[in-house]
Amino acid sequence: MKFKYVIVGAGLAGLTLAERIANVLGEKVLVIEKRNHIGGNVYDSYNKDGILIHNYGPHIFHTNDREVYMYLSQFTEWNDFWHRVLTYVDGNLIPMPISVETINKLYNLNLNCFQVEEFLKEQAEDIKEVKTSRDVALSKVGRDIYEKIFENYTKKQWGVDPAELDTSVISRIPIRLNRDTRYFADKYQGMPKHGYTKMCENMAASKNIKILLNTDYKEIIDQIEYETLIYTGATDEFYNYKYGKLAYRSIRFQFETYDMEEFQEAPVVNYPNDYDYTRITEFKKLTWQKHHKTTICKEFPCSEGEPYYPFPTKENKEQFALYQEEMKKETNVIFLGRLAEYRYYNMDGVVRRALDVFNQLK
Ligand code: FAD
Image 1: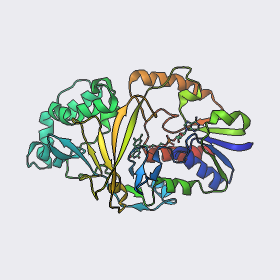
Image 2 (image 1 turned 120 degrees about the vertical axis):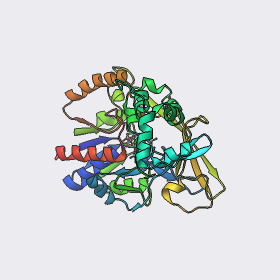
Image 3 (image 1 turned 90 degrees about the vertical axis):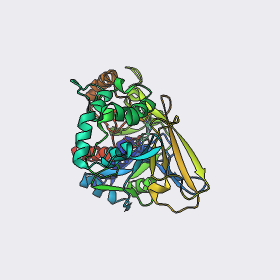
Image 4 (image 1 turned 60 degrees about the horizontal axis):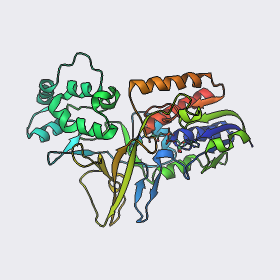
């Protein structure tokens, strides 16, 4: 078999490049995917009760990148969904991320925006050198909010104390000094009207794209002639783990269907201090599907299983740097995506990265 381009992985990174190569360059491209479906972690499907679920956890599209939004809009329409998250603390459901409403509800106050700013300044601890996720939280919101909202959630999510994680984990969580209770403030937000899988199928519709499912690329790569390999799988696997296995955090998803219209008040409810799961998602609240039953998903973080989140510690970054040195030496392999680059990407980020790589290819 002969292809100019071979892509490993049919996730958003791989499919964006495949689509561009096929439709803009007019070249044939082979995509090799080890799972039995396309879409990678954004894959969604109808369960046996006919409810559309996100098989690898809830995925909410949001971006400020107009080009990425317009690019994906060629393959799907969107519903005008705005994400909302509630957190269960001391018997109350409070909005996340932290906003004026959160503080007022948490402490039974009626402060305005300026007063909340003052309140948070009084709570914040003076930390000379902010080195860990714990330092970030304490220096932004103080000990009480840290303990009520962040500490145990982070421990559950990562299996270690926030003091052992670098600043990136908690820095991502915004604090709003206004009454905006949307989870994301991005300009473009929504759910693909007919689901992510349908969007991915549309991306891969060109006759120039051949997709091989259920196939680990290592099984067949020696039998294929190619000029460029675009690799979106795990880097440690690519190099046969020569510098050891990179650490990831995984999640066990537990899906439950109930004979009721509605399960909870918001699409996602976080449980920082109660139960072993971190959060519950109710899919109908994301997709706006009408159904007399409802399916929810509980997330149990764990260390074994599918690699989802790169473990953000200094040692792990140093270990990945060894692989990066090897990657630089490759002349006909392009590494991209969350696994190949050992970094957390949102969907818009990975599509942006793929479009940039394509522009360089051109
Ligand atoms: P992937 O989707 O992982 O695709 C890589 C593909 O490569 C996989 O299909 C894999 O099977 C295949 N592969 C790997 N190795 C091989 C091999 N040896 N041979 C053949 N194929 C191989 N982003 C958002 O913007 N909003 C969200 O709400 C959001 N929620 C998320 C929730 C969770 C639980 C997780 C884990 C991620 C979430 N994301 C979210 C991030 C989003 O999933 C990623 O940005 C996106 O999936 C990255 O695409 P990718 O192509 O890099 O990786």
